Length: 135
Length: 308
Image (cartoon, rainbow over all chains, first blue to last red; front, side):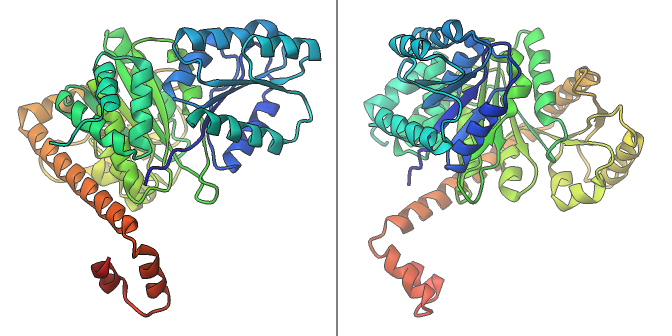
C-alpha cells in the first residue's frame, strides 16, 4: 500500500522576477500528479539546495532568466553534492545559449529546456528521471 | 518484537543524531506508508515526547504560514530549535499538489536549527493524520524543541491532523463571516488559543467579540484566549507565543498533558488499526471479487468483508 509520489522543487534562483515560466512548469507537473514544492522568487543556491534536501525531492527544476545561469546552476549542483544529495536530479530552464547548455551539462545539470519546450516533454523527462532514481 | 531491517535501524540512528538528509528520508517513508517506515517508527517512538507540538489551523488565506514564520522567528530568538510540517491539499483529480508554504518561510531555509517539510494530503483513507503524526514525531526525535504543524482547517482529515498537537491555534481573519463558518468547520471545539490575524483590518473588533462570545459558553477548565496579530508585521506575535506557553503550563499543572497524551495514544492506535485493516482487506486475494460482488449487489459490504 505504499504510494511513493514524485516530488519536484521548482525554484527561481537569481534576481530576475520573471516567474511565469516557473509557474507554468509547476502547474504542468502538478497536473501530471506530482507534488511540486514552489519556493518563490530570488532564492539563493543555498536556499534551493537546503529546501531540496528537507523536502526530499527527486528533481530540482531551476528557472533562470537573469543570465546568471553559469554561476547559479552549477552552484546548486555543487551544494547538493556537499549535502550528500547528488542523487537529486537538477534540471535547468530559461534563455540559455547552446554552448552554455553544453557546459552546464558537463557540470552536472542533467538537462536544459529552452523557451517553447512543450510542458509534456518536461513532464515526461521528470517522470523518467524520477523512475531511474528510484530504481 | 518485530525485526528491524538494517536500513531502517541505520536511518533511525541518523535521525536521532539530527542528520537532515535522514530526517527527510524518514518523513518520505512514513508519508508513503512504506513498511520500512513502521520499523523506523518502532525505533524512534521511545525517543519522542520531548518537543512542544503546536497545531495551527484556519481557513485558506488567513495567514497561517506567515504566522508560523513569525513563531519560528520567536523561538529561534529564544534559542529553541524548530520543526515545521506544512500540510496542503492534493488535487482529488490528478493526485498532484502545489505546495507553496515555504515561500512565506524562506528566510528560515538556511537556518540549520529549522527544518521545514511540506506535505500533501494525498488520497489516504484517513492516513493523513497518521502520516503527519509520524512526521511530527520524527522531527521531535531529531531533537527539535518545538514542532509546528500547519494545515488548512477545511475537512475532518485536516482537523484530525492538528489534534496530534498539545496546543491548537485556530486562526481567523476579520470579515469572513467567521463565526458561523468556523462553527460549521468544527474549529471552535478544537482551539486552545484563538488568533484574529490581519487585526489591522476593518471588522477585527467584531471578529474578536464574536469569538469571545462563543467561547464564554465553552466547558470549564482552560478558557481559550483570543489574541490579535498582524503576522505581516509581527504585531501580537509575542503575546501569542506567551498564550501558547501558558496553555502548555496549564496542561502540565492540571494533569491535562497526561490526559491529552492518553487521548492521542488512543487515536494513534485506532488510526493504526484502521490502516492495518484497510491494508489487510486490500491484500486479500478475494478483494477484487468482493468489490465486484458488492457492485453487482450480489453481496452487501459487511458480508463481503467477512469473507475477505
